[in-house]
Image (cartoon, rainbow, N blue to C red; front, side, top):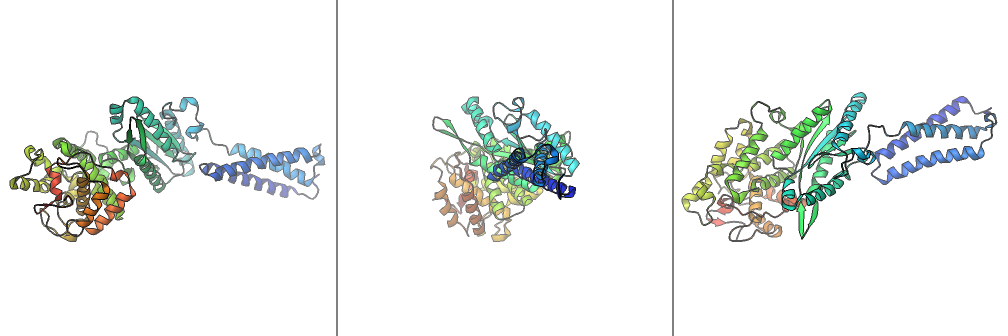
Length: 493
């Protein structure tokens, strides 16, 4: 009936058609965020339609009258249709766009927490069966409650909804973006390794930091986000373990000042361990000490967090490994912890300080060392806190170290501290602009600061608008001391 067309030839053609459609379908789903996805999906659909029409218009019935070409077209059409059905997205693998109405959060239009839990369980099962990997990112907006408190929940809800759409637009269609909690989002990334997950998380962080929201009445809101990342199966073998790992990474990111990405795999062992009923983790100690500094000195509230963020960016720009970047981040966050031992009368004094008061100020690095020594898990940041007031030309304190004898992390913190001080308001003048601050830093390169660190600082600031945000709080004599050199103000003429 099929002439010289053999059964083997028909089978080979059918398998080729099925394989072609399988490839098209897979490429269409994996490239859905680009134009290729649309083109390939259209090609697959046209293939089925063309084959079916060819059979309908050229076929002769009963089947015994089919020619060789007609038989091939029938086989291709039938296998194309069945292949498209077999390769449709599985019920548990749905993006937020394809979820039912009851599984969509009405405020953010992302998936609900229930949909997230279902998808996470499904991904664990799928990855286990096929030996695959996937990642989970939890995104937490830093200090979002202040927006609700200051502008009202209506503005906060609008900002949350708009920001959610921006986050969802950064991931693939096969990924799932869900509302995890009030101001938290979760992103499930199938077929994703740790390195790719870290890159996606960093892209989300930068997008949030660069975004501005029009709150009306000439108000523009800016936010930052902290992100925790966990990966299956390295960080957890089931859904609860992965969530807990991502939450612990998120807690570490927030405790180190926020606006950063933290991988669970890169947490120090003591930080990753449960602290229920045990000794406080290093992140808990850091948060407590940083909070104590902010409470003591109303003038420098958030100063340490800003210096920490800038110092970490400079360390990354210099190509330091991630553990060293995190060490410098913590050291910068605690660089002024010694002010806990400085009398309130000096911290709050708005006039000129006496020589004896200046001497008390100069003791704060040594006091900081003594405080941090009480937390053994923080011993590796002691040199950064102790030497952050040293100067490149050897005129600093407490040890008069010079050049590369000063730990690199301390040199970085010194430059970041000075930049933030220049940008901050003072009782006798307004904070300088970014453009005004840069010549002052360059002028002091080689004397007060390491020239290579200043170059990296400027590059980091140029690359991130958030780091250049003006500091609005004034500075106490403690911060003034970072810019006082042998009785003369440097970088603040």
